[in-house]
Image (tube, rainbow, N blue to C red; front, side):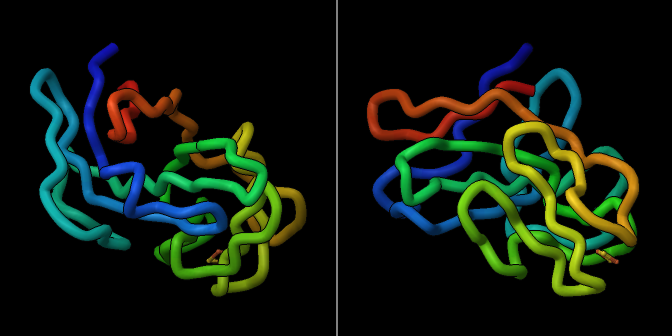
Amino acid sequence: MTALVVADAAEVGPGEVKSVQVRLGPEPAVIGPPQEQGPPGTTAIVVAHTEAGEWYAIGDVCSHGPVLLSEGEFDGCTLECWGHGSRFDLANGEPENLPADQPVPTYPVFVEDGQVVIHL
Ligand code: FES
């Protein structure tokens, strides 16, 4: 796995999210703000800092359609898609309700030296 810094921890307070577009491959990099349908070889990833102080990272594009979950409601340990209302569990990427019936990817995330780091 490859570690990638996606944010300064100080810019993502409890109850906040930050999303970025990531280039995948042997030398991953943050290439800009998230896109619903980004270039091939890239993906949108959202990091979420819960009110309880936990950090999660999941794929930011809803499994049901091209909608960014980071633009939906962040409640507890879920992100709700504004498209049709499916709520995704940040811990495992699974939708809790229809219409989405497929999970989004999850990524290990940790905070080190004030930076939010994900593992790809
Ligand atoms: S696009 Fe997300 S639930 Fe339909």
